[in-house]
Image (tube, rainbow, N blue to C red; front, side, top):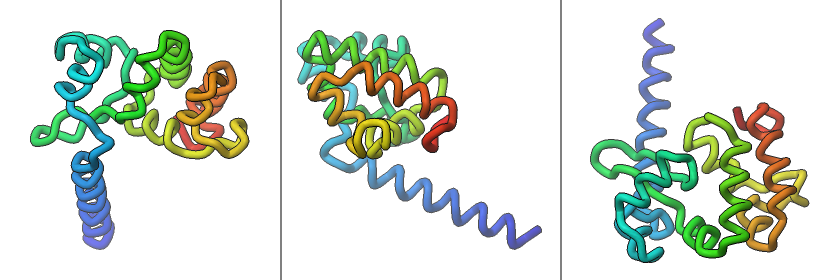
Length: 142
């Protein structure tokens, strides 16, 4: 049993280190930065996150929520915003980390492109379908 506990502690340590690295990347924005780029209030960003209209990963007490910068581009365009929100909805109630992985990993159903790339070129329906598959556990999600 002590070996299992030690392995678990090491795994949590690796996860914490990965979270810290992600939070320090320039492409992961604070709520204030997103609000400034979109010209809205910070409260609006928080509302959209809670309502499931924006994706933010929780990096803990010290770093708080971080928003991928590609999301700002997508939600700035009305058509892409609808497609992005539909994909988020299709992902269901899964955790934010799983959703983040979905958007960042190449998907077989999207010709090995990432969902972000497919959304940028207007393939919202294909991304939503891939999100349903992901959420059901068909491509590493769920």
